[in-house]
Image (cartoon, rainbow, N blue to C red; front, side, top):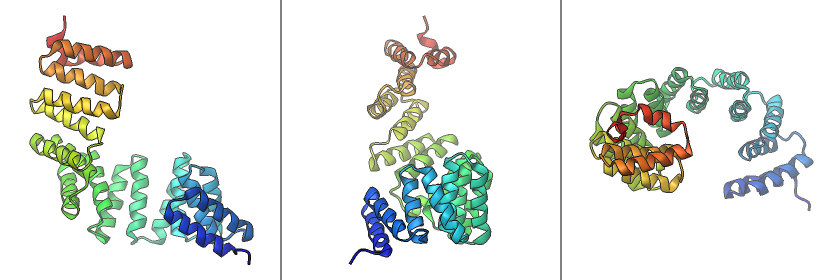
Amino acid sequence: MAPTAQDHINIGMQLVHDGDTNAALEQFNHALQLAPGSPAALLGRGFLRHELGNLEGALQDLTALLAQQPDHLGARMRRGLVLRELGRVEQAGADFAYAVQRAPRDPDVLYNRALFYQEIGDMPAALADLTRALDLRPDHIPTLNNRGLARAVLEDVPGALADFNRSLALQPDQPRVLNNRGLARRTIGDLSGAMADFTAALALDSGRPDTLYNLGVTRVRAGNPLGAVESFQRALAFWPDDPELTYRVGWAYAHAGRCREALEWLGEAISLDPHLGDLAAEDPAFDPCRG
């Protein structure tokens, strides 16, 4: 007996669960050949096309599904994401607004609209949605983390620290949150606390060049420029020939009074990005090393 459309949908869903995206896509294609307009197949294929970068195909599938089921919030929010990636921000915002109108007390809907607002840089709107979502679901770690980021951007550092602290109390082993709390601590001058957070993040995940960079900058501010050199050079192992990191090695050596090494690294940075020469000309760290 030949497989039915539902058989193909079931196999596709299992393949999605197994991580075989391309094979799953084929199953949803077969399902739609047998049952054109199947909502489940359109949803599955629309999500997979989005994940695979076929934005126009994803938009086509999700729009076809929403024509049948306008209140399908999963499809509505995913189409909003697709429209955002296509640069159609106004239409994307309309999809998220529709979803929130239909489910104003659904924390997932509020959370996803907040992520959209963060992507387009509307942090006050993101903060409002994240706060509403947390009122409904107080211990949701991703919502806490994103509200902490929004508060940090809006220069509410105490609020950001409160969110990061709460998130880490719920789940301590979050290197990204430790990194972000370290940045917040550094902003208020808590250099030892910041270095402790960066070090803890690296103990959980040593392959974080952004955290190594942050630790290096903080070590210079804390009076340990040679420790900063070590941090920046470790980061360069992940981002070889990065002009900014190369510049920072020279910058740290300059803070340490090691002018020969400082100028060697600065020269290498300028060869990678000539604009860094203008930055160095205004950077007081290099003053002791100027001829």
